[in-house]
Picture 1 (cartoon, rainbow, N blue to C red):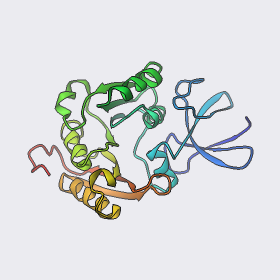
Picture 2 (picture 1 turned 90 degrees about the vertical axis):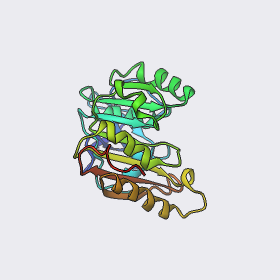
Picture 3 (picture 1 turned 180 degrees about the vertical axis):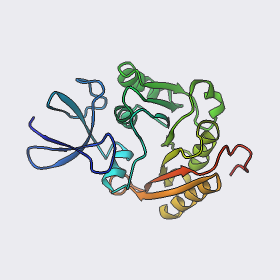
Length: 241
């Protein structure tokens, strides 16, 4: 397939693919050429292979298409991914951080972890699977190095608290976080915008500065991405919320 490839104007490690029909798609450079993770298209240009990134299956891709100012993920970073599921988005994060970086994938569902192992970890040495509950970070602290950032996508009632509890153990001042908020997992009786503000306030109380809140419709109903930076040092002695 003939296509034009250009680096994204804002986001490190992300590309625009312009197809023959003129449609544009997001993509990342494939760390494992020839292999798909979730049936995505593979595009080869000048002996480099790219994976088309589906925003209806990845909240990170959706947030980019919704105009997120900047994703903080960079080549060479250590990323703690909470709620990795079968690895759709985690595999694109793996592409972005490249072989010099690493992605620690935490999920409590055995079936999702098996799919992550079979489709991602077997072929990508920069992805480590961790079968555990993101609510208990002390149980996997021995397996995770200090992280440069946390990407959190968990369907739990206290999503911001889970992220912040992990940050207490793994992040240092100036580190980033991305929280994919699922409002209906928190409170179906409240408006999504109210839930987003509430989760953002929790992060602020735990030492984060909110950089951006981006609703993800129409790609994901009642979801938003919250990007924040840790502005304080260790927060383990601060009141838990």
